Length: 296
Image 1 (cartoon, rainbow, N blue to C red):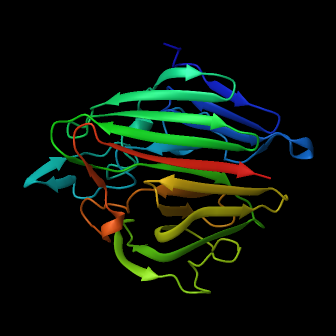
Image 2 (cartoon, rainbow, N blue to C red; image 1 turned 60 degrees about the vertical axis):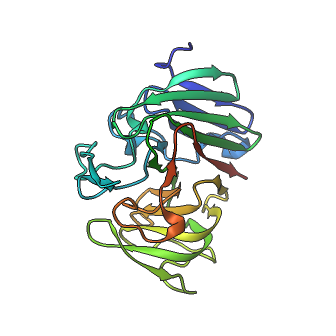
């Protein structure tokens, strides 16, 4: 087995990605390398903080996405307790995969495959595979899990990239509905996205001031960031992650999170729509998704 404590660098003439198997299999850097744009970060680079996943360039969310309220959830007449997993969060958040050391299955100059056997939350017993593949101007990240428990269990997964953002950048994507959240960042209602509203990005525009946090449904599976420095970044998703969670602190926040997810926040306790729920898997059944980040 290849040493999981080492950082693995994928690189070609146009892109460089740095992966850390020991830090939840997370991505520490993704940089454009071509010409006068050489060395320009696409994702906000890792701060060096080995504890806080929010300081990484990207981490994966498995076996659930975002928050779970009520100290856990009910399934088949039994409450399954899940406590907070981060010191600064009152609720369990983003699953367990980002906290674990992933084994390195294989590593080359343009591809790394990681694997995780996980059962730290007793209900969720699964094996996950995380694959990073570098292309000419893109990084494709694939995440798949197989349920290994005896009883059926609801699963979710997603990606949490932190894109670079500065004043003058513009965001564009198309989605039909937006899940409104309360002060605890838990969903309360679904509303239609209307042309010109503050949550409408069908035409490229800058972010609003202050905190923005919520999930889009009926997303077209593609986002574009038109950066003020001339770089155009695109993110696309396929597979189970068919919704988009957006998190930012405005044009001066320095980042923009565009998170492909398979279900809405706290969907185990607050189901918002039938196509935005965790997927119940029986033994040996699989759930998977892919995200591609490209630039030009």
